[in-house]
Image (cartoon, rainbow, N blue to C red; front, side, top):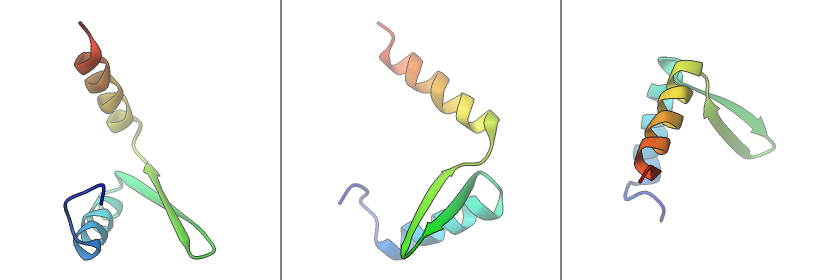
Length: 55
């Protein structure tokens, strides 16, 4: 388990993030792919990761 959350809890969180337009989803058969739908949020993640890996 990657996240210490139930499948139901993850689904609820993803639904909320879709409703506030932070993530979007794409279906391919039975598989659903989620990706960031807000360029500002994407930049924030990139800056956070860069800061965390900076020595």
